[in-house]
Structures are given as structure tokens and as C-alpha cells.
Length: 450
Image 1 (cartoon, one colour):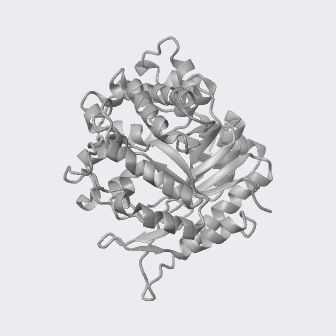
Image 2 (image 1 turned 180 degrees about the vertical axis):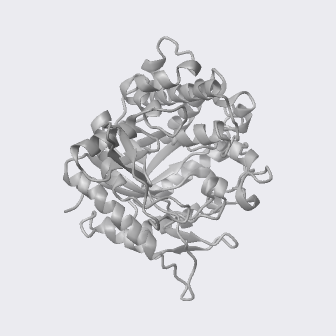
Image 3 (image 1 turned 90 degrees about the vertical axis):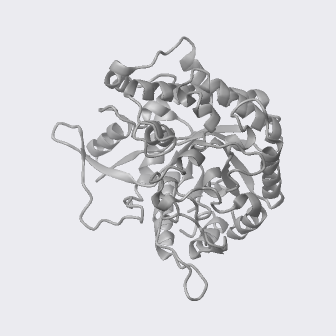
């Protein structure tokens, strides 16, 4: 049993987490450049100033991707590297970097999947109001056209935005991520609405500007609940919790997805958020709901639930000692079966897992290798569940492991290692981990050996 013949195997990274060169070759500052300088914002005072130095070592990194056997690489573009002020003047040196990277990937048989926005918002636009500014969606559309005009002769797969729950919720509500804001609910919902408009306008810009037929997707967090046992009642409870909104917050799915795929905000969300709703202008929902080719989902873990006595979802706590990753996320392989299945049923599009992986306790052993057996076991368990969804007819387009290489893990700094490739941050040395070599064998068998 394996995946479909055209199934895509890859790995992913994000610009700020690996590129470095934060102030070089004309790059503008991002909100993460700004916030990482604030004492205490990132653990141990770490910054992405150098990160993995991918900006200068990209050729070496592409050769490692080839050695791991990647068929595709999901990268993001640094908006302020290309447009230092966020709009207007183009920084040709920044755009040239992505030109060279795309060419290098294609020359080595690796298909680029490009994410337009993975959290490094231009600082100059933040100073003008960021996602709260009424023109913010137009700023994003302008940036999208610049990128598409330069790269769409070679890039055919695009993601507009990565994990709005995080860059909006953690960045604008709790203040844990850049730009570090703790907005009131009304402002938070306005920023969210503007971000959704930006997604829609970016899709329009890509359709209008692309120099060849392309596929466009969106990559939110797929927050998954799954039935503790697969009875009809428990399955319905898991579905209700996955797609329901009961409290004002941001860890939810439908507020970020229903407008994109169904053209409307969910009714339960409208009731919960009623006191703080933004103005929804005529045509807004039509702009947000643009035709997409598939749904990207970032799924790392899930929550087991059952139907309570009243039929409502009831969370089942994990047993004492339940396995956790180093970042203290629970290990729940079932989420890669139930998540794709339920999201496909609701939205009707093929599914691609755009991030999945774990932070583990990795170091270079005395023999010079990195023996990360726990990562192999984690990926093995999750991919078997993903393959089970495929066997039951869920249309699955591909899988991107997070991440290709160890990198700057946002507010956690360099304390978490998610990579298939180990990075020594002192000298930049790369070492393919045992998991990277195992992943190559999985790719070669198209998952048949799982």
C-alpha cells in the first residue's frame, strides 16, 4: 500500500528562520527583526540575524535536499527583503536571491512551493498600522504581483499565507510573537478580516499575473480533535469540536477557513464575536472566497474527545506520561488521519500536509552522526495514519516535513530542533540526521515501506 503515483514528498522552512543576512543587500526590517531585539522577547536573547546563513549557503543546502531525496521544497519569501518599505521600491538584490534559489532547486530536480507570507511582516508597514490599516490587503496584493511577475515563469505552486492563527493570535492578541501586540477583540477581528482580504486579493493577483497555469493554496493550522474510539457519536463530537466556536479566542479553524472556502463567517462564530465584529463591506466575502486548488494543513498534534452525556464534545485528558515532544506537544498520530479526512469532508478540496514533525533532543554523537530515532518513530507513526486516510479515498496531494533543517524557532530561539538536517549554529556545519536518510527511503518507496 502506498500513496498515489503523483504524491509529492518534500520538506519546508521559512525565510526568517533560516536565511540570516537580516540587514544585508538592501533588505528592510521585519517585525521579527524588531521584536527579537527586545530583551526577553526570544529565549536567551536569540535573533534571526544569522540563523542558518541560508542566504549565503543556499547552494549547499539544495545539495543536501537532493541527498535527502526531496521532490519538492516549501520555502517562504521575505517580504521586506524584496520590498524594504513593504510597497513601492523593489530591492533587486533581494529578488535576485530568490531568482537564484528557484533556479538552483529546478536544476537539481526539486519543485519549489512558494509561501508568500510566513510571518516576517515589513516593519515599515507595521509602523503605518500593519494588518489594522484599511490598505493592508492592497499592500499584500502589490507584493504578490511583484513576486509573481519575477518567479511565476518557473514557480507553479503557491501558498498565500501560513498559519493565520499564529501570526494573528500569537502576534496580535497574546503578544507572544511579533509584532508583540495585545489588541482588544474588536481590533484583533479587524486585523483578521484585513488579513483574509489580503489572502483573497493575493489569489486574484496570482491568477492575473502568473505567466503559466498555477495551483494556489492556503496553509492554516489544522487544529484537530479526533474520537477516542470511532463510534458514530464520538466521531460527530470530534467533528463538532474541530469546527465549532464556543468562546472568543483564536485557536479555531472555521473563522479563518469558512470565509476562504465557503464565502461566509461561521454562524456560531458570528454569535460568539457579535459584540466586536468588524465592518464587513459589500463584496468583502466575495473577495476573500477565491477558487483554490487544494488546502494546506499544518498538523502536529490533536485532542482526543468523546461524546458527553448531552452529546456535546468532551475532552479526554491524556494519560500521565503520555508521549510528548521536546516542545511539549503531545504525540497524536491519529490527527494525521482524522484531520485530513474531516477537513476534506467540510471543504471538498484535496489536502496537502504542509507542516508536520517534531522537536527532539538532537546532537552530534561521538561518531559524527545524529541518531534521532524518536523522529523516525514519530514520522513513521504519523505517515502510517496519513496513508490510512489515502487508502480510504481522501485525496492527498503531498506531505512536507517540518523542517528541512534545524532553525530559529521563533520565540523559542534556537532551543528547539525540528530538522531532518542538524545545524551547528556556531560554525554552520550541516549534518544529515538518521531521520533524513530514513525519509529518503520513504520517498523512494512512495510510502510503501511504512
